[in-house]
Length: 64
Image (cartoon, rainbow, N blue to C red; front, side):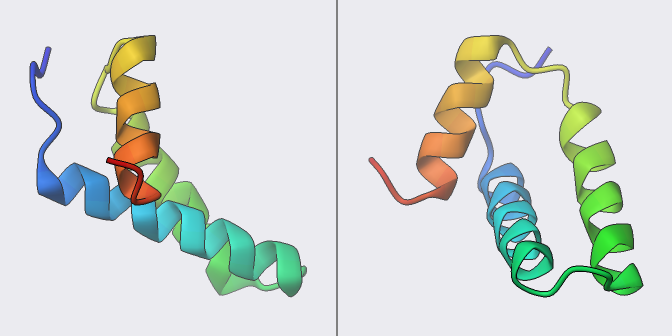
């Protein structure tokens, strides 16, 4: 299990958030759905604890 949250993982979370917002604004976009699924798989593969997931989301949203 990863002990630290790397900047590339934070960037992946940022991309996930942005893609989710785009899809919410413009439903029915196949490319956005595929991108969201891909990013979800990347994030899920990290096996982070709930506390690490919360920290990742906090850092991705720019809350230090």
